[in-house]
Structures are given as C-alpha cells and as structure tokens.
Image (cartoon, rainbow, N blue to C red; front, side, top):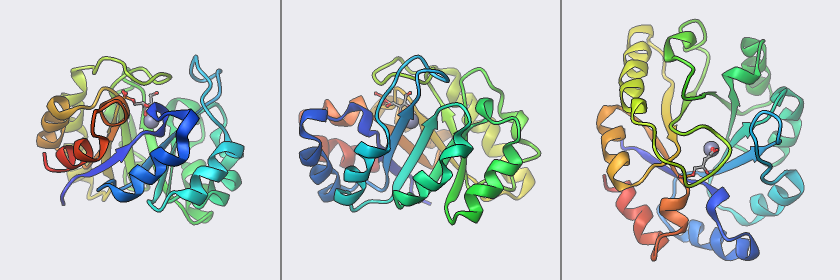
Length: 216
Ligand code: DX5
Ligand code: ZN
C-alpha cells in the first residue's frame, strides 16, 4: 500500500489552531496525529480533552491519538468520544496490554501499541496479531523537533519481518524527527505511516510539504 502521512498537531501554532486545522483539511493529510502527554510518563504536558473536543469538531481527517500517559486505559471513553479512529497506548505504560487492546477494540476503535526507542520490537511477538498498528518512537517521547534516532530504520525492518512471519495485518508507524530524508529511508525499510510535526508545521508551505512527504 502507499504510505500514509499523519502530521502531529503538537507542532501547530496553538494561537491559531483553527487555521492550522483548516490547512490540514485541504492538504493530502491522511490522519491527524494528536499527542497527549501527562508530565508523568513523559517529562512534558501537551493538551487534553477540553482542547481536543474543538479540534475534533473542526478536523475532517481521521484522528490518530497517541497517549503518552500512565494508565491510558482510564481514558478509552474520552478518546472514543472524540470520534478517534486509532488509539495508541505505550507498551511501557500497560502491564496488561492484551486487556487494554481488547477494551479499545470493544469501544469500536483501532488499537495501536507504541514502543519507546529502547524497547525492542521482538517483545511484541505475542500481541502482534491482535493490534492494528505498531508505533515506533524514533525520538524519546515528550517533545517535537528532536533528532531522529538512526536505529529506528533497522527496527522497522525487524518489525516488518515479525509482522510477515506471524501473518499480522498491523501497520508500522514511525514518530519523531521525520522529514523528507529520514522519511524516504523509513518508507523503503517498510514503514506504512509517517508522523511529522516540525517538518510540516514549520515548513514555509505546509501543504506542499505534506504533498512531498506523500510522494516519497
Ligand atoms: C513526540 C511526539 C511526536 C512529535 C513529533 O513525543 O510523539 O508526535 O510531535 O514531532 P517531530 O516530527 O517534530 O519530531
Ligand atoms: Zn506522537
């Protein structure tokens, strides 16, 4: 399949959110990626449901919610109420991951599992057939605009092999430091979805940048 582009709202201009969402709506964006942080699981706080309610009302693209929080299962009803298509939870935040994935599915959403850079892909062997997506962090989560961790390219290849061997249909998404250069190598290695924050929202022409990322 052709790869998908999911710009991350974390890098948008929060003083003019409506304008940035309007740009997303008229671009070739596939999904809008929403980064929720709690200051506990990651050393930063972003935005929460009262803000995202308005984002969801304005956005015409499917919502891909990335929860960088402890006990993400507590917020399944809130994520569902946003109308989210995908709910991503961190492997490192869920001791009972199988149960959480089941609860996300029961709520009617697709379930993604996210791995920090230091968590190996092979740990997903026993859950890979139950998830719709694996989100590989290519920076330590918490902030936009960080440097891409090179090892992620090999990790995409390794995960692709695990997915193919197991017969899983999971997509591979990569998040952090994605631009035209790293994005091209990730797609060649087997990534299905590229998250891009700074490279899109800080571009002189974000709509053109989304087109270029989509054309890799
Ligand atoms: C990092 C977030 C990312 C981030 C990506 O914790 O999960 O989605 O916004 O931003 P860039 O593309 O600027 O690295
Ligand atoms: Zn993210």
